[in-house]
Image 1 (cartoon, rainbow, N blue to C red):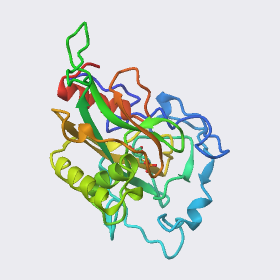
Image 2 (image 1 turned 60 degrees about the vertical axis):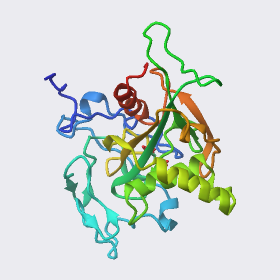
Image 3 (image 1 turned 90 degrees about the vertical axis):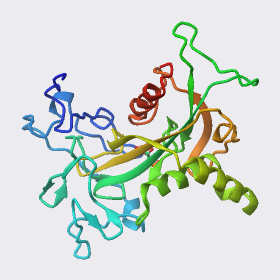
Image 4 (image 1 turned 90 degrees about the horizontal axis):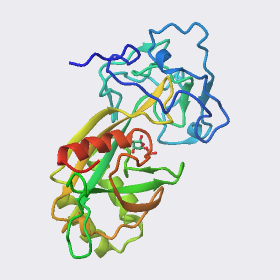
Length: 290
Ligand code: RP5
């Protein structure tokens, strides 16, 4: 077994997208954390990061109250009513009443833009098909003879980055429901369709999304993570082998997606957070070109 480099957290994970620079949609700059100092037990005597929680969260009905608020009695590392405060990475520490990021330091205290203290659970659909021409002939990489995989990607409204069409789990929702809902909202603009169109699309997605293959469950290296709040996801691959099912769908961006496209899954594609790493797992599983 290969040795885990010493700067990786206990889970063997590292984050790189949330350790320096200005926090998204804010003026607050993180205290820079170098990769070797991410782990909480690496000495960093000068570590004193700024505290930032977006003002918008104060009025947001979906967000947790502030820690210390008498009404707020969270059950960390547990199912807390309709909210899942358990981490896929195992039990996290709660230090001076604040949950601690299981991967390590981020150079920022508080919650940033995230609604929940501790884990913010998301779900990501990875809908794939083989790249083909209009006659249905699949494309292979000329040198290695492997087929090229395409996946449904959205352009995020906040950062403009391309990403999986995922989203946050609503209270009481299970992650499979989140995945279906987000796909319909962001890629099939279900909010703007007639009742008939909605029902046709709904049936297609319900049918096709029965046979998913989970490819990832855990921490997401997301630029919005902080020392006290972070994103975790369950990513599920739905592969249309013949391209005759969801592969034929006319995509239409909706909700907070600016754009939606079938994109070739290639190693040089820059995606939001660590979506590229997750995509690579799908590519390997299906034996596609990378
Ligand atoms: C990512 O952010 C997750 O993997 C998921 O795709 C997404 C959830 O956040 P929102 O799109 O709801 O902002 O880290």
